[in-house]
Length: 261
Image (cartoon, one colour):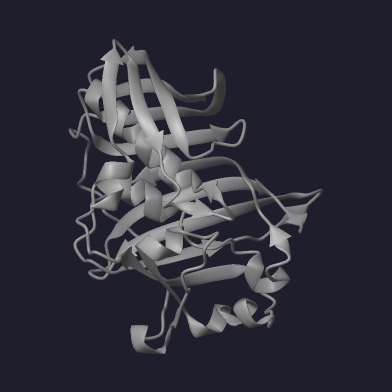
């Protein structure tokens, strides 16, 4: 499977891993941020004693490009409950991405399981709009992303007032989900601001934080991304990923630039 090949890392020395950044997961010819987090998580998982409810926050310092890369992992702290790391992607001698990752022991108190929000309401998949494969947006050649009709108008230069994209998502080859896959999915919905501002907007991510709560119990996932504030060239985007059984899979918050192309 492409995803497994394209996120593979190999340990070359203590805390150092080699990787190859692929061009199969790109947005506007740039490797998708969630894909880069997925690559980093491969190395992180080999270092951590824990793997439950991970929180991964990535800062994008410079543009990554397809090609060889080095992943450096440094342990920050280790307690009975949490294992924390810092990781970096290095290309051509320069740090391109830096991430903080927290893994829990899995022994947390799960007696309270309360949702004060519901999965996004979506039209049946047969009524949704599939994002087509575009040469410079190769991510959509690997994922099926089907937008709800209420927010899909921006692809035909029809805008709405609410900056939200929501829809169904899955791997085209129906690959099973794990942590790297969920990190990718959490950052694969088109920018919410496109619903109101159109494709004229370029939205490079500065920072994204993803908290994975559970592994999905379905192939198709319900995803949403919402922006409420755009000021001084910056915006926030809050994301949710749910499975078809109504289980919360992941929540995310990212800060990005809002630029006109």
